[in-house]
Length: 454
Image 1 (spheres, rainbow, N blue to C red):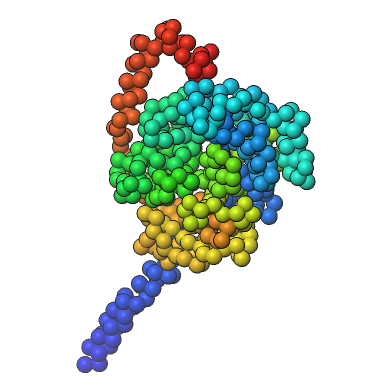
Image 2: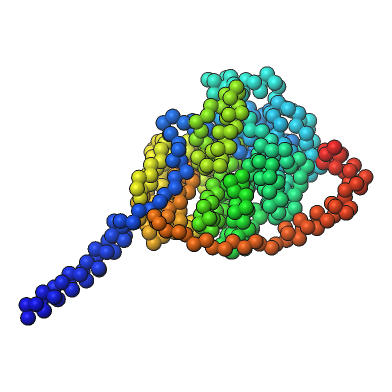
């Protein structure tokens, strides 16, 4: 009898252990280690520079209503450190250079451009700005050859290209991202995808961001051309892009098993006065940006783009309401990954009202904690987690951390090619160009006088 009682006691103890101890280990004390990839791992936050950067802005050289010299002065006044002028179909060859333009494009946007003469900066003022004269020796870096590609497509399927001679006079084919992204990739440049919601129509039907065809279209671009195509816009100023974070998260979920993590990006896309500060990035760089160090600074910017050592800043809250120019958005002062925990250290806690951790499917898994233990969210996290800080001065988006149990291989879901109208249009235009346009005197005259192409 005593042996039976003892045996029952052992069985009961084992059952209690299985019911309570094992779930507790799985939920909070899981001995399984996670491999967390931290994009900021190499950043020394105490020594590196945090450069306020604008990667997407317009002038009256394409469809803005402000001359380039004023655009530069406004960014200088607002303490930007790096500025990429990215007019449609027009390459930035320097803020002090009389930039060749596309007359037809400026004419279409006549209500803004008024076809006014292009007014670059003087060489003297250019040298002052790039050497920090008038603001305590803090210079501003001129990013070469910025250009918004696919300039005249109906659905705003726009791509920004940087650093390469490509895109002048290029109007594009509707929904055809691949042609400009591939061209920039082949030339050794960098590109990013702008306001995808204007193409997908997610502002009319948010569910489109979860449709396989939509997700696969964008995932394929990064699968083929990452890291030269380095980022997807997640929260642009357009009313059509309010749900782009959902698309971004779905794309991440597809690509991380392939070892690809496209970065998020924010920008102003400003066309008029007062819009410069509404969105930008802050790049963590070890390089100085003095004029004498320009080539090295450009290489540092490229590295930051490729490695994701930057933050996205958005200063419109709620949607459509611009915050004052002196609003101070939250900013990150350090990121610490220790075992299974990730900690975000804000520069100024007073600038932060809430901290939100997001994982697959734009699912909020934690709000209010600067530190999370990923093991606590094992049922939610499939492959990554990201965070943002929100405050009265705006939002600071942190790049995603990949989170994978040690020793586990994530299954690669097939990412098929997407056949849509852009494929047909691209082939049609290519055939027209090959058999009708090339060598046609009237087309040559149109290109020369309407597009500015010699």
